[in-house]
Length: 259
Ligand code: NAD
Image (cartoon, rainbow, N blue to C red; front, side, top):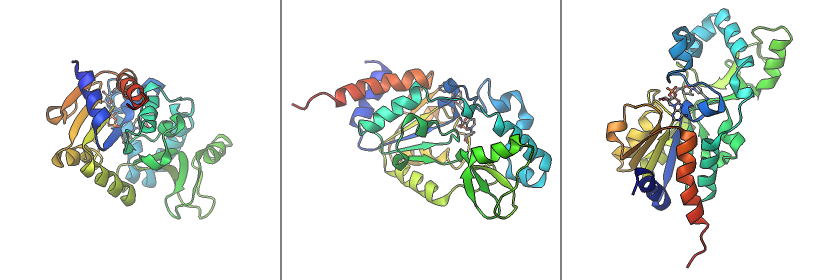
């Protein structure tokens, strides 16, 4: 039996499965990750400043640069890939308790993952949020203003600073979303981490919580992670190959007639 078969068996029989995804599941859709070999920060370490709320609030130049990058973000052209679709299949086969994604690209929803079973724990680039009054609107409205000549569009309700509805470094996660993700991690019996370097906290603590509660941990990633030595299985490779390979057997066996 191969390791892939063994992990497939765990997925088919687990009582409760939580999947955590990171930027690596979307690289095959054309969105670079941060820390992989072609990652945004690997190629341009200064870009990390743009993800820090302190610099964003204090410096209009950082905001203008952020709006320029948002306008050109690859998410606007990206389509879900086979990895995103395999997770939809697992959900439809009744094999997914909760999908927690660190991605802000909206591709799990675009693939068909149910909003009820999905937590976009670092928010979404598809909306804007005002840092003062919290007013939230679809991102295309703000991008149209940028294209029309406003390099740093202000909130239309209160004049406050606008930002994508994403969680930057220095901003708190939505406490309800985090509590729900933590509770699911602590009560699942199988936790699968896909395409994440497991370096951004507090999300990176979720698989540790699952392990501490005696769940199995499976890591699917192109490169080593800091939790590999505690994982029950490490599948090294592309999420777009490995997730469909895992889902195919499970979805097929799930559709087999009973008896
Ligand atoms: P990361 O960049 O720190 O790590 C990504 C990991 O995925 C790397 O270890 C890399 O080896 C692996 N990887 C790359 N392509 C892969 C593939 N095809 N199959 C399997 N593994 C692959 O990403 P992270 O852990 O998610 O943390 C980065 C933070 O940046 C997150 O908070 C996330 O919100 C944000 N981010 C999001 C996007 C997005 O929305 N698509 C893109 C970049 C960064």
